[in-house]
Amino acid sequence: MGIKGIIVIEENCTGCGICEGNCPFGAIEIVGAIAQIDYEKCTLCGACKEACPFDAIEIRKEEVSVAPSLGEFSGIMTFAEYLHGELSRVSLELLSIGRKLAEKRGTSVSSVIIGDGGLETEARKLIEHGSDVVYIISGPEFRYFNDELYSEALVSLLKEKRPEVFIGGATALGRALFPRVAADLNTGLTADCTELDIDESGNLLQTRPAFGGNIMATILTPNHRPQMATVRPRVMKVLPADPTRDGSIENFPFNPSLVKVVKTIKDSVKIEGEGINLADAEIIVSGGRGVGSKENFKIIFDLAKELNAAVGASRAAVVAGWISYSHQVGQTGTTVSPKIYIACGISGAIQHQVGMRSSDVIIAINKDPDAPIFDIATYGFVGDLHQIIPILIREIKNIKGEA
Image (cartoon, rainbow, N blue to C red; front, side, top):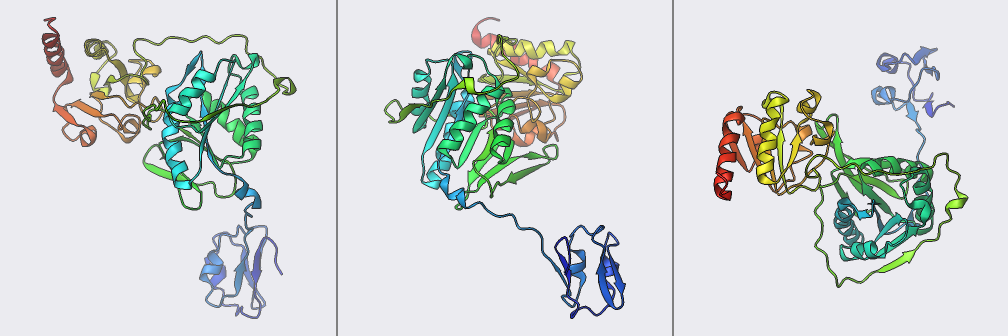
């Protein structure tokens, strides 16, 4: 007999001491020609079992049981983020991956949208972009985002509809909301995914950068449902709208007065950023360490102005205090996918590439010909950006007839 799941089979044990010598925790001692286990020290690492040539040690680790109710879950559900009267772009991006997952599973795609009434137009837009069913949760209490109230509403919906997969955007709202929902449902959550897939058993393959972006980890939630993940904005393409798509819109009954919340949102103010929104820009001009100083960033803004582009930056430029965090592109900043991305003085570390490598065209300007950014660039200029950018600006003005 043994505790903690480890057993010494006495009739097989010869007292050779091999297990004692291989235990990294000093949890085994040979007493009277039989191995004895110190259960206070044993961690069930398995080193003794692997070392024993006589099969005298058996380890019985606790098995995680798969709930029989997993088969009751089906379908892919997306969270449609709606704030300040607008449906976020990532809500439409999620439908493209939602359709891919649904086709593999032979199931449907549903969406949920929460707000203060008048959501039918947005619901119809979701259907045009790939949703089969849209659930509306509305009421004056949902005028402003409140993570406590929103999570209670979503948990109520998810418990009734039982989707196999529930995904949302890795936005400020998604990061505040999805962990609460996952905790209430006692399920797993993988945040900031850059890729999603699903296997034939229905396991959601949730891929995201790990260890500072040096590896890509694929995470599974095999024993709980729904499988939840948030996806970085701009890593998925939006499916073209199809006004002829059929779908249904259902109002989901939820009584906010039954929810006890500890905070009340009095107002929500939308702060407009400088220039063009980075996440929605079709052209982005980004500066990195090679720009040299805060004052030198003026040349980046000048080029962006001529191209009607947004201004981005690498983490190094932000940390140096040359530009605000709202401009940061990369793993710890904004993920972008413009038509044209111009990287000026950016080496192209993997952490930065994660946030912009899905751009249609990447133009790199760097003095170092071995900079990693050139490995993914469509076009590259090896040289001093302070000499190259003024030439680009002059040529653009000539084309525009402004020179």
